[in-house]
Amino acid sequence: MKEIFEYEKFTLNNGIKVLLAPVKTTRIVSVNVLVKTGSRYERKNSNGITHFIEHLLFKGTDRRTDALVISKEIDNMGADMNGSTGQEYSHFYVKLLDEHFEKAVDILSDILSCSKFEQKHIETERTAILEEIKMRKDHPSIYVWEIFNRLLYGDQPLGFDIAGNERVLNKISRSEMFEHFRESFIGSNIIISLAGNIDVKSALGLVNRYFGGFESGCSAEFLPVHESQTSQAVELRYQKTEQTHLCIGNRAYNYEHPDYYALALMNLIIGGNMSSRLFTILREEKGLVYSVGALNQSFFDTGNFVVHAGAGHGNVEETLRIILGEFARMKSEDVKEEELERAKNAVTGYLYMSLDSSSGIAGYIGGQELRLGRILTPEERLGLIKKVTAQDIRRVANDILKDETLNLALIGPFKDKEKFEKMLTTRTVNT
Image 1: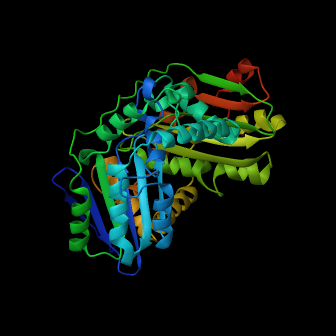
Image 2: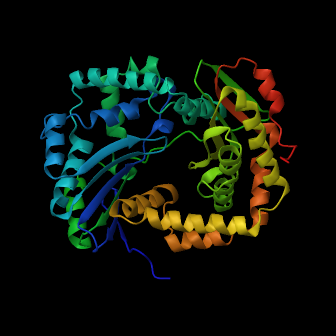
Image 3: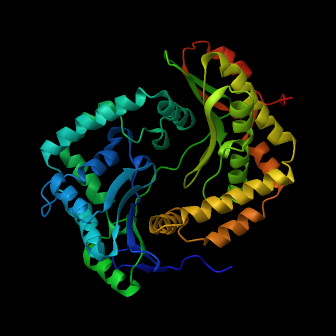
């Protein structure tokens, strides 16, 4: 099968990796910068500092004196620009017409190397981030994920809130932020991926001109996660909500695990789309929930699998029993060939649709390089998907969905933790 895109990979003298994918069927260019810095690179006394820095990088540089100057420049080109902070990396991008390509590289280089961190902006953003944290706590469908994350990883960086700890955020100083910025936003931590209407040689020259002066530094290191769970864990957060929100799941696999793709298919079959088992039963057949889904999250050295749902308070126990029953089915029965084929076809469609734009291609090649240190083509990934058998999925289900280490996070008007602990068994299959 012909590759749907081509790319070239380069490394600048300062260690920055550059991935260039020409796409001649579009006038759009997408410039992505991925930086290996996020909440899991922090410590307890600096939790939230990376997210704080992300906010400040859009507030002004020596050449672009404030946020309004930056936003006017972006809007004048009809461009889209933003940033985000995750657990293992931070992401900054500009998407715009090809005629403004150099300006995109210039702006990203400027904010990632010359931001001023003015005290007045620090105080404004400190208040804004504290309000952001409060807002998320007011949304149980969001906050339940943070509780589940802490249940799994506890007092480790992977268990930290990306937005930060309120007590720590109130104390972080400009000098601490500037030091973290200078240590993190360096060549050895940066991957730049570009896709769209570009010429490889000239694009590489521009990237080298604007990013070649970054310090190389030492690659960021995180604390490896320590996992020693031997029993179930349940956390209830009593709150008078309109719905009860829950996350239930277990520890799973990292990006490089040989069963990564079998887990991805298991996830899809259980709750990954609108024909999945849990959506069909809980939403379409029984009407117990409005939202239900499954997600397998992978990191560099670990991962987790989780089912999430929002149900009426009176439907929570039945919803939980059905979820656990589907876990049991997955462990005791091979998925049907038709079901497995549908999941594989869905993955194929989702993957190619995600690559139907310059931003999708730039995101794909950058993400692969960041997570794996190499780029598997879409065809190579789908080849690995096609090899997964029903027996592989059943084996993975028995490895992941173990009763003795299930985790349940729940927000709603409940205080009887013991009742939910007694329910956490997958030994009874739905009938």
